[in-house]
Amino acid sequence: MSKTYAIADLHGRFDLLEMALACIAERAEPPATLVTLGDYVDRGPDSRKIIERLMAGLGRDGWRLICLKGNHEDIMWQTCRRLPDVDWWLTNGGEATLISYGQHKGDQADVAVVPAAHLDWIETATADARRCASRFRTRGP
Image 1 (cartoon, rainbow, N blue to C red):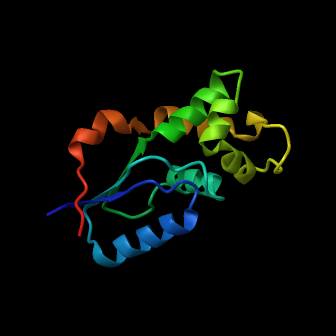
Image 2 (cartoon, one colour):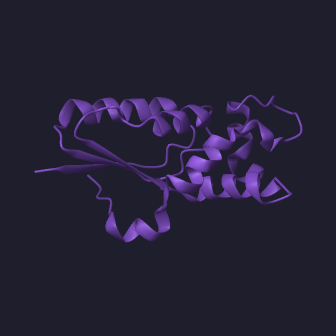
Protein backbone atom coordinates (compact mmCIF):
# COMPACT_ATOMS: atom_id res chain seq x y z
CA MET A 1 0.00 0.00 0.00
CA SER A 2 1.32 3.42 -0.94
CA LYS A 3 1.83 5.87 1.92
CA THR A 4 1.73 9.64 1.89
CA TYR A 5 4.07 11.74 4.00
CA ALA A 6 3.82 15.47 4.64
CA ILE A 7 6.31 18.17 5.59
CA ALA A 8 5.04 21.58 6.61
CA ASP A 9 6.28 25.08 7.41
CA LEU A 10 10.03 24.95 6.87
CA HIS A 11 10.41 28.75 6.77
CA GLY A 12 13.97 28.79 5.49
CA ARG A 13 15.20 25.88 7.63
CA PHE A 14 16.98 23.61 5.15
CA ASP A 15 18.31 21.54 8.05
CA LEU A 16 14.73 20.60 8.98
CA LEU A 17 13.95 19.61 5.39
CA GLU A 18 17.01 17.36 5.20
CA MET A 19 16.21 15.82 8.60
CA ALA A 20 12.61 15.13 7.60
CA LEU A 21 13.65 13.62 4.26
CA ALA A 22 16.17 11.35 6.01
CA CYS A 23 13.58 10.17 8.55
CA ILE A 24 11.03 9.45 5.85
CA ALA A 25 13.60 7.63 3.68
CA GLU A 26 14.54 5.38 6.64
CA ARG A 27 10.97 4.30 7.25
CA ALA A 28 9.25 4.40 3.88
CA GLU A 29 9.20 1.98 1.00
CA PRO A 30 8.15 2.95 -2.50
CA PRO A 31 5.73 3.64 -3.89
CA ALA A 32 5.19 6.66 -1.70
CA THR A 33 4.11 10.27 -2.01
CA LEU A 34 5.70 13.21 -0.26
CA VAL A 35 3.63 16.36 0.04
CA THR A 36 5.36 19.55 1.12
CA LEU A 37 2.77 21.91 2.53
CA GLY A 38 4.26 25.27 1.64
CA ASP A 39 5.88 28.06 3.60
CA TYR A 40 9.37 27.09 2.41
CA VAL A 41 10.63 30.67 2.53
CA ASP A 42 11.02 33.56 4.96
CA ARG A 43 12.37 33.87 8.50
CA GLY A 44 15.12 31.19 8.35
CA PRO A 45 18.52 31.45 6.65
CA ASP A 46 18.20 28.92 3.81
CA SER A 47 15.10 29.67 1.76
CA ARG A 48 17.04 29.48 -1.50
CA LYS A 49 18.46 26.04 -0.65
CA ILE A 50 14.98 24.72 0.12
CA ILE A 51 13.58 25.97 -3.19
CA GLU A 52 16.52 24.50 -5.11
CA ARG A 53 16.21 21.16 -3.33
CA LEU A 54 12.50 20.90 -4.06
CA MET A 55 12.99 22.03 -7.66
CA ALA A 56 15.49 19.17 -8.12
CA GLY A 57 12.93 16.59 -7.01
CA LEU A 58 13.47 13.55 -4.85
CA GLY A 59 15.60 11.52 -7.23
CA ARG A 60 14.12 8.26 -5.95
CA ASP A 61 12.29 5.69 -8.05
CA GLY A 62 8.74 5.07 -6.96
CA TRP A 63 8.40 8.40 -5.15
CA ARG A 64 6.06 11.21 -6.07
CA LEU A 65 6.68 14.77 -4.85
CA ILE A 66 3.83 17.26 -4.59
CA CYS A 67 4.80 20.79 -3.59
CA LEU A 68 2.04 23.05 -2.36
CA LYS A 69 2.39 26.80 -2.36
CA GLY A 70 1.91 28.47 1.00
CA ASN A 71 1.07 32.06 1.72
CA HIS A 72 4.76 32.99 2.09
CA GLU A 73 5.56 31.76 -1.44
CA ASP A 74 2.54 33.66 -2.67
CA ILE A 75 3.73 36.86 -0.99
CA MET A 76 7.23 36.32 -2.41
CA TRP A 77 5.93 35.71 -5.93
CA GLN A 78 3.55 38.68 -5.86
CA THR A 79 6.26 40.98 -4.53
CA CYS A 80 8.86 39.87 -7.06
CA ARG A 81 6.54 39.82 -10.07
CA ARG A 82 3.81 42.38 -9.47
CA LEU A 83 4.10 44.69 -6.51
CA PRO A 84 6.23 47.84 -6.59
CA ASP A 85 6.48 47.93 -2.77
CA VAL A 86 8.40 45.18 -0.97
CA ASP A 87 7.41 46.21 2.57
CA TRP A 88 4.57 43.66 2.66
CA TRP A 89 7.05 40.85 2.05
CA LEU A 90 9.73 42.25 4.35
CA THR A 91 7.32 42.48 7.28
CA ASN A 92 6.48 38.80 6.73
CA GLY A 93 10.07 37.54 6.86
CA GLY A 94 11.20 38.33 3.32
CA GLU A 95 14.48 39.93 4.39
CA ALA A 96 15.87 36.53 5.43
CA THR A 97 14.86 35.12 2.06
CA LEU A 98 16.56 37.92 0.14
CA ILE A 99 19.71 37.40 2.23
CA SER A 100 19.64 33.70 1.33
CA TYR A 101 19.75 34.81 -2.32
CA GLY A 102 22.83 36.97 -1.75
CA GLN A 103 21.40 40.31 -0.63
CA HIS A 104 23.42 41.89 2.16
CA LYS A 105 21.73 42.62 5.48
CA GLY A 106 20.85 46.29 5.71
CA ASP A 107 20.96 46.92 1.94
CA GLN A 108 17.89 48.23 0.18
CA ALA A 109 15.69 45.30 -0.80
CA ASP A 110 16.33 44.14 -4.36
CA VAL A 111 13.98 41.43 -5.58
CA ALA A 112 16.14 41.02 -8.71
CA VAL A 113 18.42 38.70 -6.67
CA VAL A 114 15.71 36.01 -6.88
CA PRO A 115 16.22 33.96 -10.06
CA ALA A 116 13.33 33.97 -12.51
CA ALA A 117 13.46 30.16 -12.58
CA HIS A 118 12.62 30.06 -8.87
CA LEU A 119 9.66 32.38 -9.34
CA ASP A 120 8.51 30.31 -12.33
CA TRP A 121 8.66 27.17 -10.17
CA ILE A 122 6.66 28.85 -7.42
CA GLU A 123 4.08 29.93 -9.97
CA THR A 124 3.73 26.74 -12.02
CA ALA A 125 5.13 23.77 -10.13
CA THR A 126 3.31 24.34 -6.89
CA ALA A 127 -0.37 24.09 -6.14
CA ASP A 128 -2.05 26.51 -3.79
CA ALA A 129 -2.11 24.89 -0.34
CA ARG A 130 -5.35 26.66 0.57
CA ARG A 131 -7.18 24.82 -2.21
CA CYS A 132 -5.76 21.47 -1.08
CA ALA A 133 -6.04 21.95 2.69
CA SER A 134 -9.22 19.94 3.02
CA ARG A 135 -7.39 16.81 1.86
CA PHE A 136 -4.79 16.87 4.64
CA ARG A 137 -5.32 16.89 8.36
CA THR A 138 -2.67 16.81 11.03
CA ARG A 139 -2.96 14.69 14.11
CA GLY A 140 -1.17 15.31 17.36
CA PRO A 141 0.60 12.69 19.50
